Length: 259
Image (cartoon, rainbow, N blue to C red):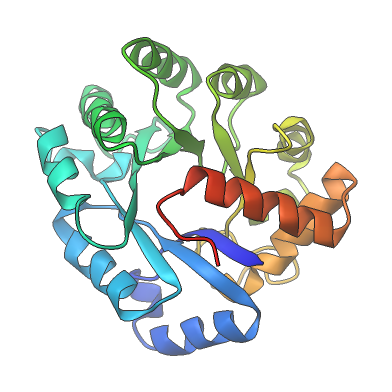
């Protein structure tokens, strides 16, 4: 089955035609989507999307860009929100030292709160990391020593050393449209080395539209292009790629009933 493991359908880019975007996803064969929370303060909007559509589930969390909005975010708050119907993950959370839109120490503090919530609830953590490999490896290592938790390295484009560290802890990885970009050979090399039973695909829409749609607003209906590129890079048939990513998805997001 076609599954988009990371969508941002709450984004303003979809305000004019959100229902049409969801309809086109269905028509393209997309049977499940995970709507990602980027701010606890706007979680009600994210959750409402999941509740309004049977094929959409959601996470709860605050993106590192937004962590300055709630620097004292507690695991208790996240755990309480995670009890709502159709919440299946914690995040998107992590570290982003490329833009530094929130102070690094605040990003780290808020990220650790998400880890604690994931550990307590048993829900998978959706991790964003950019240009923060050493700090991310340190936090993951320290937190994993405090007790295991399931986590997904979403849209992974960081270095091979961090990938190896995360993989040794049992991390899942998701592949996005970046793998189709002409200049992204380093990303394709990472994809070839990801654990075969722990790979998901995502659009991260409205961002990162895959070739042949690059430059356009991305949407879930384009997920098949990402899956095709994954199959090519791993030497899998399209059916095998679909089966493997489906199995990996349900192993990670195990609160979602498998059809």
